Amino acid sequence: MCGIIGFAGKRDCVKVLLSGLEALEYRGYDSAGVAVLNGKILEVRKAIGRLTNLKSELKRDPVGGSIGIGHTRWATHGEPNAINSHPHTDAKNKVAVVHNGIIENYVELKTQLMEKGITFRSQTDTEVVAQLLGYYNTGDMLQTMQKVLPMLRGSFALGVVATDAPNTLYCVRSGNPLIIGKGDDANYIASDASALLTYTRDIYVPDDFEIAVITADNITFYDKNGQPTEKQTTHIDWSTSSAQKNGFDHFMLKEIFEQPRVIADTLNHYIDADTLTLRRDRMPFTRKQAVLLRQLTIVACGTAYHAGMMGKALIQQLAKVRVDTEIASEYRYSEMLNTENEVVIAVSQSGETADTVAAVRKARKNGQRVIALCNVIGSTIARETDAVLYTLAGPEIAVASTKAYSTQMLLFELIALDLANLRGELSDEDLKRHLTELLQIPAKMEQILAQKETVKAFAQSQCKCNDVFFIGRLMDYYSSLEAALKLKEISYLHSEAYAAGELKHGTIAMIDDATLVVAIATQESILEKTMSNVQEVRARGAKLLLLTNYPFEPPVGAELWNIPHTFDEFAPMLTIVYLQLFAYYMALQKGCDIDKPRNLAKSVTVE
Image 1 (cartoon, rainbow, N blue to C red):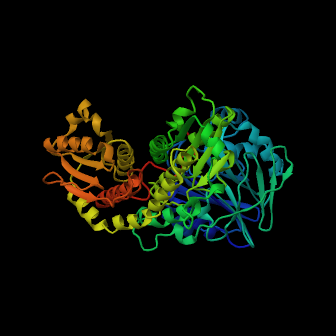
Image 2: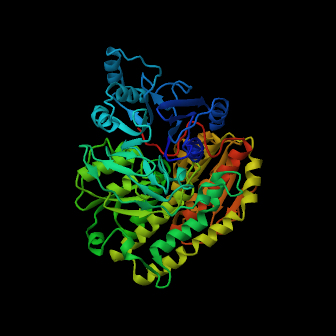
Image 3: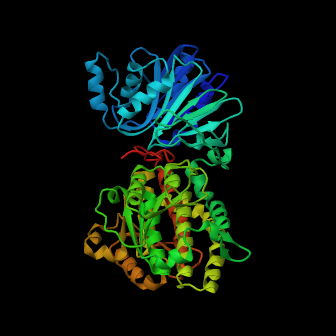
């Protein structure tokens, strides 16, 4: 959701700003702009639509300077147009601001400024920040920001330049992601690391309300009381190729095909393959904590929530611990019924999901131990929890999550196995047997990826399909939830997921010969029950696709995709690869913008 880039150096900044904005396109946006300081002259260029329009505007009316900020906007306040685009300036054109997040009290602040004679040009909440900084400007922007920031309510990440400080870039965050990159002859700010990989791998992650004052040669931090603070850099191991397509038509397809590698990387991080044991220093529970554990609550949103549903099934089945999985936006406003020795697990690819951050803070305020599963080192959730398990998926550029989801599932597999072993529900020998099979998952994923032409051909045969129902039981139902979401996200087709046993309770009325039903059957204990549901939908004329890792003769006319056999609890990690490919090829034939679906943003950092 929106993207920020900033540069302070000794060379022209426009190329760097545009490069950073290109790297942030995946977050979703409807307009873009830059503000550049050339000495004490502040120049702004904006354009509606894609970044190519901004490039055309800069070619027609170029700007130059060594200090600048850029932004890709996803509209929240005010329609998408050039006026509402960022950067925004104050009335005297002496201060420019880019902003991610929402200023909740902007109407109140705007009214106060209008009463003081300030005229507003846009409909945005961001312009209020620029006008406040301009109105209260003392000539020292650090002091001015310290005065203005306490006036703001909401979440925000701000990049600021001012003509009174022609060699300086300022930034601050509160509840919204922002990092600072340390370079050799320049320094940077950005919404996330993908925008900086070309220039630096060493970053700072500022705390809330910590202001950074940045020049080409120096980065200084000040706390909310104006006192200098010391910070350590974090090194990012992501490669620049991770943020490039490398011959694939879309980032989503590339990231689907990266899953065997990232699963192997994550396995190697947490498993000692020589001894077939879990690396104890990287697991979140001691034996005592595991034995005392009475309740787990998993909080997440969207795809991460589906991983959490899988985590619930795995932990309950293997470790015999009661687990609730809650949508973070519901959890944060619900009444808490606490259980002694309860632990909360927060799942977020970005580590910045607003509702999940709020859920973490609620749990911690309530005295609960909180564990994070996330993909971004130094993210808010990673920093504010008691323990972190990283997914090691690398940067995920496509809006629709694929490899982050599969690695989240893998971490829940590992947590469930570890808890089961520590609690005495799984012997050391059985744990080794499970870990041996887990280490085979990347190779089995490769077998499924080799079937991409089969998936593509079937998707093409469904070009006139308008309704898709995914059905399954237990973990197959949770796979169905994620499959339906993927198809909706990128193809805009109507798709729904149902627990197969619920079909007779109303849903089966929707089934006819124009409906595609995708049935998943990988859980041996309820295999016959699921296959009975398959026969029911087929008898009503539905087109049928069956995914299974057991030998079945599919109903006449049905499509069968075989999943390499594995333990039932590991099968969803293989199933989802087929379903991600299916969603991709359905969207491809419809001509959809697969990496940047309409109305969606990669990281949801506001409510």
